[in-house]
Length: 251
Image 1 (cartoon, rainbow, N blue to C red):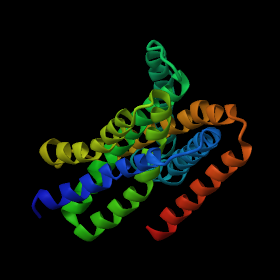
Image 2: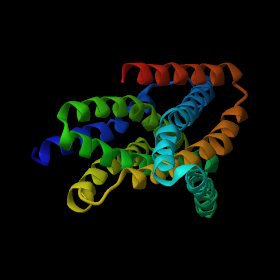
Image 3: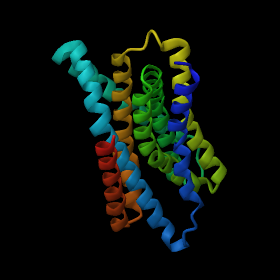
């Protein structure tokens, strides 16, 4: 198969994150803004934790345990997960040096963008290589990725928009996150097609799972609780869980 078709499939799947930024164009009454932010943060943390627990960790851990056997596999997986946790704190410190209005929301948006870029990069490799070998399999994987990339776009666009007041900034950062997927495809085609292994991708995915779970619990959840809109926290989590079930059973 030619390069173009798998690359196009991967690009569409990745850049679907931009669709999540559409929500910032909705006009919310001033008194409803905090409720909307609470809902978006709760929804986002549910998606991130759900994807990590139901998809990234089981599949990646199984691959590593198969490669290295039980004791080594558990140890290497744990180390990769710890690197993901510590990376959140390192990025947090870097962002804290750039003080600005609505610093908490800005930090959440940037952390979400970086986490999801790292998540999207190996996804781009997997989608491209799958499409390159089997078009039907590639389309199936890309549809599943699109389904969870849209809410991932929301998790980047909403905090950045309400932190900066700039729709352009929010959309740009969401676009950069989605761009990681076709970038992964391009690198896979040029450099990695004959070298990339399932084990290598699995370590990256466990690292990303550690990053996303830590980001959700340490950053997104406390910020959502700050608004004291408990009904909208439950609503956001509920919608996120429903979407995760749809993604799991449909794809």
